[in-house]
Image 1 (cartoon, rainbow, N blue to C red):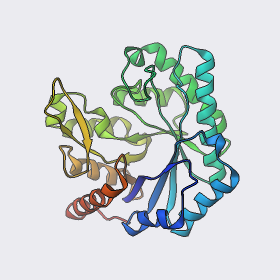
Image 2: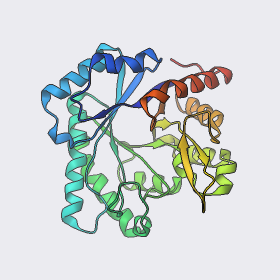
Image 3: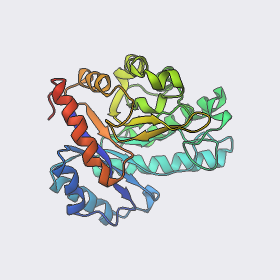
Image 4: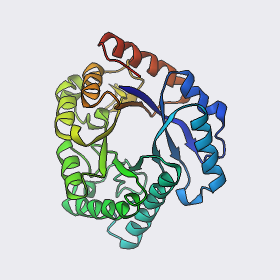
Length: 285
């Protein structure tokens, strides 16, 4: 198993330096993913080349690329097409940089954010539009030598492991993968109190299509009605041992990825995950 990190690069990329990227290497990560906060089409060749040089100079694997775009499940065809064009631009940039996976979020009908809830997110029509959009993104990604990696969440159209698998099978299983992120499917108190069955179900159903595994953690807030919040791995309730065992079983080269943390909390997460991997007898390289 390998450890990767998302969050060290999360900007318009003009602030990326060798020293900034070196932080990931110094913590013992072997791979790095990058986020853009601006459209991929805004990134100049010079800025892109600098990011690639900084990552290569630190002997890190550049394994994933993510960027913003409008919703790709909108009923408004003009909006949907703009979202597809934005996601295609991310895939095109990934191909230019030799990054093997381009991230695709299912987005939302909620205008306040890609991951905020909306009842229409879960409709069959939204799934159909998502399938259409992913297929159109693949028209750019596949010729560029890039796979699409999906992110799923209980609030999104990709709201269950079964639906994730169905969407992959409806598009292109050879070129569509998924980030298995168990925390995103903690949707109720029974699951929160005992996550093992949910973790195993996700791996059982989607493991063959796994691109990376994202290892976060969660806790329950003392607030009405139910509030499930992310936290640093090792300080919450997720059955991390099962997640790590299942990750290793997929492939000795599979990435377990730390994400959604402020940079100053990444070291704590890495120490915990490394300690658990060692305790479980998992070889990390």
